[in-house]
Length: 183
Image (cartoon, rainbow, N blue to C red):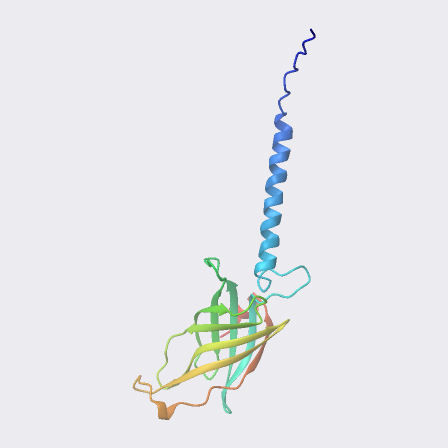
């Protein structure tokens, strides 16, 4: 009768296990990046494609005599669960009534071509107060449709003193330096 002696299994070397571990981590990281590109292309696009997040500038006409510069800094809300939204900062400059604040918004479709922003700006008495922006994004242009309220000098809102919402306006890409220097 012949007996075969089994050879002892060779243990993997520490170096090989380390290389395999690093390769697995790199593959997982690559999958996460790919998933983000597929799930939120408006924030993390494929190479060479534009993204919605970043700095934007434009000019809104409240009335024929009242034009103001509007600056946005859009960032992806990292605290999203099911739908990833945007947050950021807003600056409105002009008419000697500069103001700034924050916003939070919703991206309405997968590509991010439609979105809305709810502005959290200090309310000014006897002034036009912007409360919401509905946006349409395509490449390096964002078209915004603002919603405004006129607050009376005593701080009240009355329906007979409201003006029509300003017309849609375009915004173009800006830089952080331009945003910081605004107003």
